[in-house]
Length: 109
Image 1 (cartoon, rainbow, N blue to C red):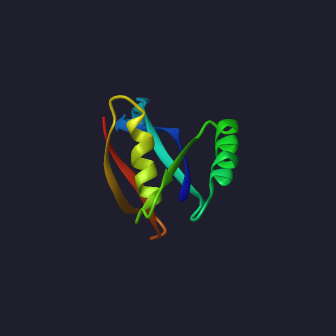
Image 2 (image 1 turned 90 degrees about the vertical axis):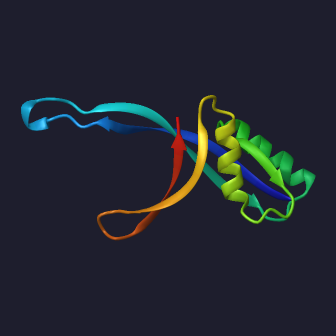
């Protein structure tokens, strides 16, 4: 069984840019960013219990899958289902100033 630990972290997103040269502030809203990490690709029930102990200490949740092609993607989707009013759309890539691409999740609130 594939064991994945997932959680969310809050982040601020600018919804309206203010004119900072005139002293206006940006308007923000808080969004939840899903995070997932692979605990074991082929684990046992004992490994699952260890993962649950770790997750309990770190405000996370354990998901177990069998032969899932994209277990991290599915865990990010499943953790977002726990948050009411959020519809997980998928993942995209966004280039930063240095040209490196960063995976980010697209959410519809």
